[in-house]
Structures are given as C-alpha cells and as structure tokens.
Image (tube, rainbow, N blue to C red; front, side):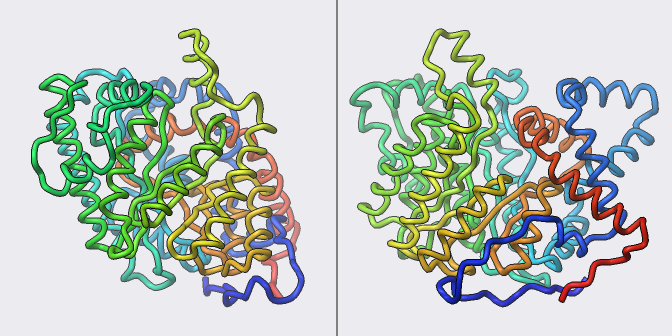
Length: 458
C-alpha cells in the first residue's frame, strides 16, 4: 500500500484541527486483517480466556495436538499481536507498518516474575537473556535499512530479564530508607559500570554484591551496544516493590549514556500515572536531569499492575500506592503529560517524551498542547500503542504526520504466548475498553460487505 502520510506541518500555523479517531484510516488495511482484529479483540475481552489463558493453551495442545493448536494461535492471537519468529518475518511486519506511517518498537518477551521459581535465577539464565537483548539491538538497527521513516529506532528493555527480582526488592528496601547511603548513588553505580571494577555495597551480602556487579555489567553492555547501533532503550516499569531499584539502575545508565556528548537520551524510563506519587517523582527527576545537564527521556503510561498492587497492599496492610479509580488515573496522566510537554517546549532536544496511551482523550490533549506550545510533529514527542490494538488511533496519528510507534513482541509461540497472556492479565481494562475499536471495525466491515468498496481519501 503506498504511503499517504502528510508532510509534517508547523503546529502553530492556522487554527487547531482535532484529529478524528473514527476509523477512517481503516481503509488502509485489508478485509482479512480487519476481520481477524475484530475476532481477536472480542476473544481477548472475554474474562475467562484472559484469566485461564495458560491452562486453556495447555488443554488445546492436549486435545488438538501441538501442530493444529499452534496453527490456530498463529492465525489468531499470535498473528494479531506478534511480528513473527524470524528476522525476516519481523522485517515484513515492520515494512507493512511503515507503509501505514508507523514505526517499530521491538520487545523481547523475557522477564522474571516476582517470587518466580529458582530456575530463572541463575547467572546463565540472565546471560542468555543478555544475548537475546543484544540480538534485539541488532535487529532494531537493521530495520533502518528498510524503506520508510527511520529517524529514531527504539527497543523495550525489561530489567528483570537481566537481574533478580530478589535483588531488586533488597535494593528497593534500602533505597526507601531515610537518608539512604551514598553507596547506592547513580554516579557510583555508573562509575562501576564504566570501569568494570568490583562494587561493594554494605547492605548486600557477598553473593548479592556479585550478582549486582554482573547485573551492572549486563546493563552496561546492552546500553553500549545500543548506543553504537543508534538504538534508544525504553526501560519498562514494573511493580512498586521493584521500581525504586529499577529507577536507580536506569539513573545509573542515564548518568553514563544521556550526557550531551552522547547525543541522548539513549536510556528512557517509564512512568506509571496510576501511582499516586508519579507526578511528583516525574517533576523531581526532570529537574534533576536538567541540573545535571543530562538529556531526559520518558515513556508515559497509565500502568498495568493495578489489581496486583492493590492486592499486595491489602495483604501487607500497607497504603495502596495506586489512584482510587480510572478517573483519578486519567487526571494524573493529564497532569504528567502537561508537565512533560512543558519540559519539552523549554528544553527542546534535551527532553523527549513518548505518549504511550490507548486513550483518545489523552492523545487529543497531547496533540493540541503540542500545537499550542509550538512542538513540531517530527520533534522530540512521539506516540506509542501496542501492535494489533488501537489502530484507529495509531493510523490517524500516522496519517496526520505524527511519529507513532507500535510495541512489537517477537519470538516463538512457546516464548510469546505466555508473555501475551501475562500482558493481557495486566491490561484487562485496555482490552475491555477496546469496545469502541471493535465497533469501528464492525462499521468498516459492514460497509465493505454491503458494497461500499474501499474508502477513497480526498
């Protein structure tokens, strides 16, 4: 399909024209793609499938056999949400996206769940994951050679693929103490990363210190390789029991790799608006980066672990860290968005933002404020949605000339399906909120089936 993207417009020229997320851009997709999307979104909105997904997958394999079960998954959920297994399949998916004015954000489907079995806790497991991350950097870089836009290549990095959640919890408990030791400053960790010299932290035992040193080495190797390949790392946020440690590790990477001489930001952190302290922390971190002369990269999300966070807080008798309801979360997202867009307008290339949202109002707010603040469409603000979801928003943004990324997991069925099911369990509200997209898909399919043909753009 030939690209029909509009050239980037000056946001301050003319009057404000809000984008229409009415499914008009679905004309760019084939009838088969739209039909699969409708069926899969309906399936994913069915609670038993999400809750018991892994058990249902195992039952399907026993009943139908691996070959037929795998074929059904590839024709449905895997085909909708996954780029493929091989580099060639991933490139084919990315080329399709580029014809639609969209860009890839590759994600390796590896992580360590909190309190997971010991089999994931060996250094060999983390080293294997490091190799997978380095291959993802190379694949992300190779996509620059394909036709289409290629100004910024991104990939997602999940730190718990490279370090133990038990270590993260230990570091978090230490970081949260009043007057936490300077032993764990980002600068000290960054120096240890860069020099390779052994780091000794008094709050950790010998085994934990050794694991921390190996973790720092792995993170540094990924960042170093990504910088050399011109790929920016978007680090995922996870549970509140881990996030302070993850943010410390990201801050150490940022200290080393987000300096002006590196042309950063090469390392971005993710901020979850459904947590009560996010707006304050985001403002504090932005100011700290500015004072240190570091570039600042942010992926802003609503958040995915609400049910688990509330359950843990209730079990432990601690304060619930999450916003009380969806409206409060949306208000928090709006405030964080305003804060970051103001930072971008003030600090230009030293401050970058990905508006990672499936919410139409949040996206409209972002585009309007970009216009009001004079932030160019091809500047330091971009948008992000999941592959296979929210296409009515992604396509409308891409066709209007905004920079849009689709988060793209890739890998074998065995690797990706458990990952997808976990993401579905964490994103129940997003899946159940896809009813509007389903209705737009129905309307477009109904129009085609009733003889409307392909919609013609004027």
